[in-house]
Every structure is written in structure tokens, then in C-alpha cells.
Image 1 (cartoon, rainbow, N blue to C red):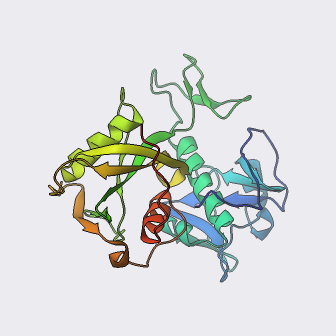
Image 2: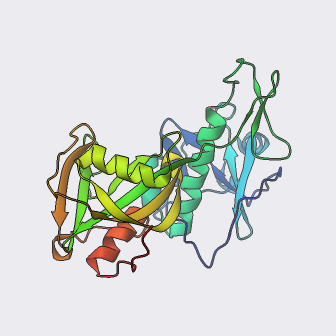
Length: 285
């Protein structure tokens, strides 16, 4: 999955650091990310900037390190970077395709923190300006002391099986057209298992039993922590589709599952496990 970057090591400890020209930078603007203008489409370094280099290095925040490589977020409200022969702006959906996978993970983790910095300029309680924390990654209100941390929303991914088939779905009204699994965010007051049962009932109108936790995944694309479950059908397999959420839901046998899955997401890993007959053994609760 996207976070599995071994032998590289991800270090997300909070630090206040100053970049050097070999440090890597992330610059987001209008739904785009700045990348190197070559076939590799790598994340650029400050030394790749022909102009505004000093300004960019002055107005940036340290994000994290991968091995000994430091990554910074350049503040787009202060520094206006433009495309050059070396650099280009690509749509953010390009992040999924960056290679090797640790580069994609770096980009989506930076995008997650970019939204945090971008959307917390003012306090949600009193409207006063927010200040960046000095001891932890947080914003602190300059007036009332309200503290805000990066948004991480728990969500479930559910693989429902029945008589040798798995329930696969497709979203309604999205550019993404591959099959996926039933998914949804946990509501206040809910356990993860209650979220599983509610989401399955809401989206396809069926009941499930024998829930089995599989694994979890940080998913910076939606500021989420995805939690994967296997479940079995409980009762009728008749699907009652919520057409506001889904365009398709179908029971598919392993041989009918398409081959167009990647190794980025928990969803795809679980689908491929079923297709290859490698579903983990049951440990019901």
C-alpha cells in the first residue's frame, strides 16, 4: 500500500527546521502540485528554483523526512512560484501515479498537511488569527487559546462475501470508475463495527455478520485513517442500491474481478486478496 515504503523510513516527528538547497519542497496551487518537468515527475528541490528561491526557503514549513531527505511546504499565499523549463504544475490526481511509491506517499502526506495549514488561518471559536505551534504540529488561537491539530477522520472499508463472491461497488458521479468496496466515515458516538453495519445497510440495503478486522491505512487523499473489515452476508443477498452514493453494486466471483487494480490502497489490496484466494482466516467478534 502507499505507506509501505520499505526500505525507506518515514519520520513525522515535529520539528522547526530551516531548509537548504538540497531539501525537497511541495508547492500546491489551485488544485495542482509543482513537479519536476521531466519524465520522472519527481518532487523538486529548492535548488531547482531559478527565481524566488530565497523567498520560498524563507516562507516554508518543515513537514517530515524520509530517510535523510527533508520535505517542506512552501506557503503559496506568500510566495508565487511559476512554471519554468525545470518545473511544471500538475493536477493533484497525478499524485497517485508518482513513482517510486515512496514519492507518491510523500506527496499525498504533504497534501494532507497542506490542507491543515491552508484551512486554519483563523480560529473557529472566536475568529482571531491562529499561530503555529512551537512544540507540536498544531495551530493555537492568538486570543482564546483554541488548539487545532491536523484532521484525521476514521473511516471503514468493508469487503462483504457470500457463497464464494464479493460485493463490489462503483461510486456515482465521480471520475474514478474502478470497482471498490463499501466505505464510509464513522459518525460521532459510533464504534467502527457499528459504522460497518450502518454503511452497508445504507449503501446496498443488506445486513452483515462475522465482522473481522483486517488492517488500517493512513489515507491523506481524504484526511482519513481507513480501517478494513471482512464481513459475511446476513440474510438476503438482494441489493437495494443507494443511487446518490453508488452507480453499481454487484456480487462477483474471483474470476470475474477485473485486473486493473494497483497496490496503493487498502481497498485494492483486499479485493486482490479475494481474487487470489488469500482471504485471512476468520477471527470473529
